[in-house]
Image 1 (cartoon, rainbow, N blue to C red):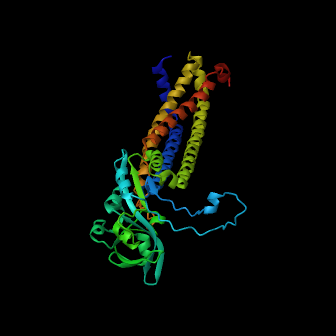
Image 2 (cartoon, rainbow, N blue to C red):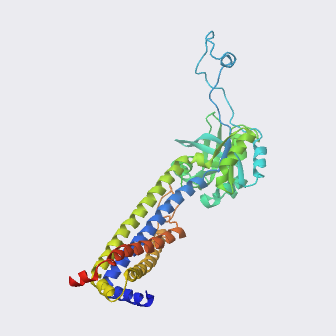
Image 3 (cartoon, rainbow, N blue to C red):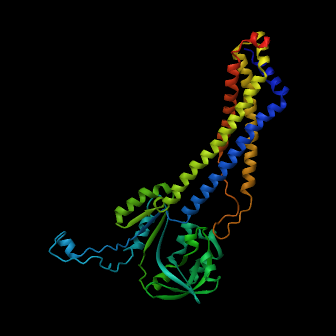
Length: 418
């Protein structure tokens, strides 16, 4: 086997049928380009949706779950005793959602290894009133520096500043969609009413947008002391502790540890966003199914082209065998052609795929107030480009090997006789 001679013959075959070579190369190029563009875009969308949801929620939330079940004294002392008339469906007694020693617990949690930040807060349902307009929502009393560390509020502000909240005891940072519904702007006053009838007038000093309807439509931030005052509670009154971890995957065991230590309910990010994570898994499966389908279809096209190329060269194969070339030489000739087509077509596919992905990533996308995004989300992952070039080379090599292996076994005498 002379590699120099076989490579010269392979190059001659490629140059003698330039159009056929170009078509085979373009099959590899556009198959890989479309694969990279589609998988980069679809995975970018998945990543954006996941980041939007997780960035706006704590990795662990600690709270005191209010239990509406109220077993009677008779039920506890004489369970199942038919001699007593038991009243069912009693009204639940009033329970406070406070965390006892909540501020102390927050400081202890903050010293735990792996904790990025902790934000103790007071949350409550309220009614926002602006003249005849009344909208239900929530208000969170926070220490704004801690909250900013957890959720990067500065980057999410649409107007105003979080620094103004520290200097304004009656300030309010409101969701931008909620502010639009109330027809208020920065500097306007809004009346806040709790379900228990407590009211207070607050001034809107800023608006924020997470790009998540459940937050932007209903939520506002105020100082911790302000919400405590609205609820007529003391300065130690805390209802929630939000925790962010350095490694989000550690939030699940850490939440269980906190529940065992303090006895309060804990909810990790995976539980709180289970529907989003399930949807992401489904989208990932769909993405790879569609992307691999593109590659498989392109692979069959490449195989057909290479097969026709071998059939068209069947007389050349017979002459080569008649002049002393064996079957391995014939296979090598067509494998060299396949490798050339696969490598050149694959590299062009990577270049075109990257170019299309980049153009898509800078294309303006107007999502209004519902999504905090200006362009289409695209994920530039090196693994996709490695997968693309490997597919191009492997597919063309296989597409060249099988027909050439079959052709190498033909009888040159029968071919030359016609």
